[in-house]
Length: 302
Image (tube, rainbow, N blue to C red; front, side, top):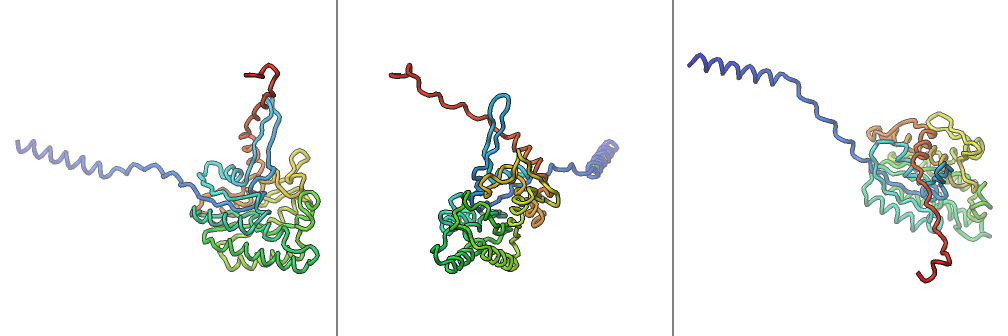
């Protein structure tokens, strides 16, 4: 009996050692938590007029695109959560709408903020009497300072665009009185560059350079690679102010690349190809609803 008990004890010990010596079963990696991105901006970020449309065998397919939509397409499977406060109404009252938008994004506690064209209407627009140019331009720069003060409320990474020269849009979309003097644009961008040095969480995207590339060469550089417009696929709309779907895809790639450089831990893609993003955008097009049938005489009284 003692012999049997001894053998059982040895067998139990052997099994215990064997189990302990086995490597632990690896646990499945935790799903990457959604990255919360705040979106601040005006009509370009709001997707003004940015409609992608195609004629297909089963009818017309179309869908509108906002900057947030394009950023999501750039990031692919990376889970994202947007607090999208971009508004085409910024041109009506940048200070009031901008303040409310910043407060709303702050309340959502984003991990980063994209403010591509947030500062645009703090510089552009009607800022003073038309016959007092010097006073008007001084008010522009004072307004621009208020825009910077709004962005200074954030401590998380902020990607902001500088002020582009949109003089080609005057008479197409912009009234002449809304166009700053080029000296004011230069002063605003100098101030932005200096301000960004004081705020290490801020990265400035050269929107002015991107717009100039779109206007002059019809080619935008994305992560060192050219993305060219075509007659069928322009990057700016006819008003020479707002981006087409192709243009917004290129801009979104540039913005995501900036965020990826600023915070590698965000696990965002680098050097995305706008053509690939645009292909994804086309794949998401929905079929346009059939037009509502006009009332027929026979319908009367029904």
